[in-house]
Length: 392
Image (cartoon, rainbow, N blue to C red; front, side, top):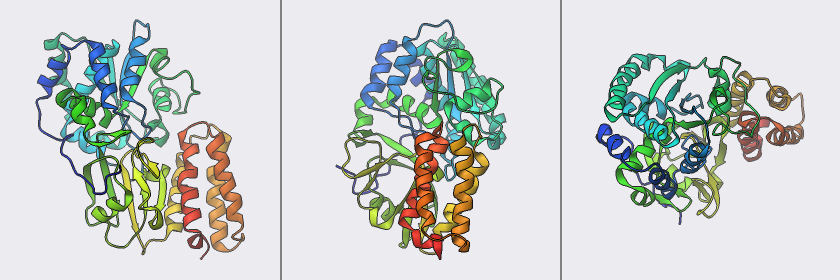
């Protein structure tokens, strides 16, 4: 059953002794830690939702003399700002999760891939890293973590583009398979997890898999941080149980005149008012109706907002941030932007929107990575639900 009310929790920022959690966890057999994560049904909190325990299990099974752990702190999705708060307030939990991963898979080196715009955090991060490395010496775990500063490219939020940039090349996605857990950084098995995901691995070690599963719903266990912005009197960061309906979310955070919610940032779906009741926030499975995962961005729009302007803003962003590697994304983003502008100016008839929708669907099928594939999410959901605003 879906959560009919927004249920806030206080887990991720809850005070706890990171040193003691790490120390106790490192005494557990590696297989036990993996099984706890699998039992918890924790899924990646970056938006893709891949089971964390399974990812670590696959990497642990790889035979290699060198493995890596990478924390993806390239928080570039429009409307998302929760990882910045995590890094600023509870970095010890992020590093603790990385240490657990290193212990489980057999890695000795780790990296925090920090987005360029978060450079102001570097002094604080470096200070905590010094303390962390002292912990590792005390625990006799051979694991060090370094900072890697990204160049400010949105595409590097995608794990293989991130790895490419770390290796000194352009941030462009690789073909999959092979996946990073087999062939990652420098060709070695690599686990790449989101900032928030590493924190939840620590909290699961702290409270146990069963208690974590008590939150959320079947198929979407636990809680998640949401970055709430837009036309809301409660803009900010909130930790909420997964499985809620969008209707309940709007009742909690809307301003009484919400006409649409952009779930998952520019690469997510724009849900109109008529679908609030049937839309749930969570991962596939265990929910009736339409389920939407999200990396955390929840942008609320009321009746005063032009959805054409919203879409235009997204398309300008995508055109700028496309790495240009594949034709569907490189050309498609440009043509979608030019197309909606031409319709708005009256140079193209409203029927041309149908051609643009077909182009967006083609991009979803043929683009090489998630950037080009996800353009269709916001484009199609806005055009189909707010068609009149694209014309008048």
